[in-house]
Length: 360
View 1 (cartoon, one colour):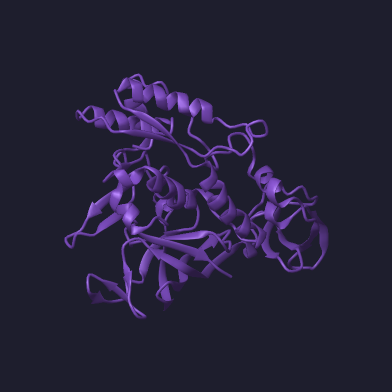
View 2: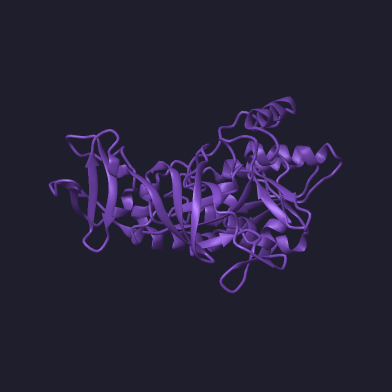
């Protein structure tokens, strides 16, 4: 059991305990590089995890994945940001750390690894395990899990995935868990009160450049670095005469393009390409898709999301290769940005098929 110190994973331990089970619990330490510079809540997290493990008679072991996080997830993040893209570190943390580095260090000794994610799984008639959505559309975390490998999914258990958040809180308060009323963490899991921009500035510094109005070519100001801005951003711009929307980045010329207005047309897209699509449980064949020996293309009618929101958007996929396609959304989508993960679901947004990077 991966025990984080938050209320969700703590209720998972309770769920096991009420069945007479006492899982071995592990707290994954990733933390900041230098404690004196970063305000991190990891010490409080560990105290909470220890209290919950003790309450239910479970062993707790701390697994240090600090180097792996900074060597793998931070490297991924900075390379993408430097290239003008919009990465998602938490997605890669699940693949590379929680279900990756941890498995190499201790998880390989176990058949199943449980977490407090809001997600579900199901086995179909052919024995394949699918990642499925939670009934809580706000808290559902399948989008954060859509890059894990098939062997990681086979080992994964999500014991509270059938609950909504309010039910988990009620259980925690009823059972007098020490973190029953603790607030959910926001943003990247280890940053604490440090902003994402400060995190980026530490590694990439600043690189000033022009801010240009897309429609007129007029220079309206200067940015401190393209990596401090995301496509679709409309807050924290600091330019007069707003509101302004970020609509494009020219990495080669170091230019940030913006559009003026509360809801400019340039802030929307309806068709965009996706590459390096990662299938959760589909084997790729020569040019087609092979599922249990049957070669076929998946149903092109799907739903998708490009950020962690409750909404699923209907679309059709135009396949251009085994791992590439163009999304034809039935709705205009705000803030489509290269580097974001486009997560694909079936038409009922029940089964998650996988995710890939939006490209230009």
